[in-house]
Amino acid sequence: MLRSLTGALGALILILIAGPAAARAKVGQVAPAFTVTTFAGEKIALEDLKGQVIVLNYWATWCGPCRRELPILNAYYRRHSARGLKILAITTEGSVPPAKLKPLEGLLSFPLISRMSGRGYGTVGGAVPTNYVIDRAGVVRYAKADAFSEAELDALLGPLLAAPAPAAAAAN
Image 1 (tube, helix red, strand yellow):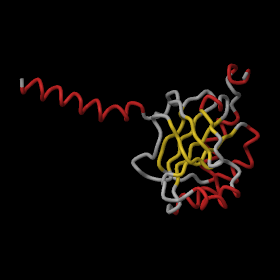
Image 2: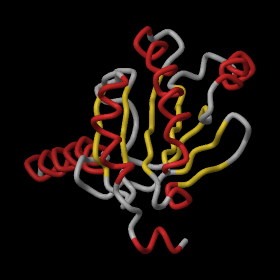
Image 3: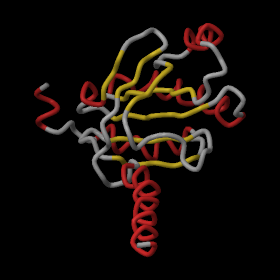
Image 4: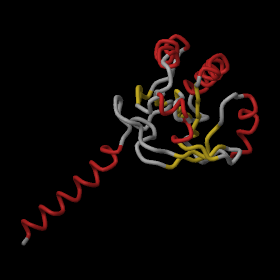
């Protein structure tokens, strides 16, 4: 009896530990579904972004690399948004009320996200900034805790933006 109880408990622990990891967005695999809510209250689902190249950027106000990266992302977005680029900047802390981020939101060309629902995303190893890149076909191409430089954005996103949208996405 004790042996079967121990075995069952061990299996339950493995399921609980492996569950979130199994659902984690993985490079080379289809991106898990998500819905975000912008500070303005708009809801955007992954499904709404079919055929676009998506950057999910997790950042925090106290993070120095994040503060350096946001202007780089903003400049890149301004230059390439017409080519099908979508950047969503997800704040990782709830301690800063949206009203305090209003001035920053007004400076950025892409939306600040207050909430995200869906499994598989979040900071990698608890670190910020964390970035995910999803290609036009909905496949995760990058998932890493690190800040982008402009050269790294060009190297990663340039080919993805040059690729045509899949036929099904282009028809939408």
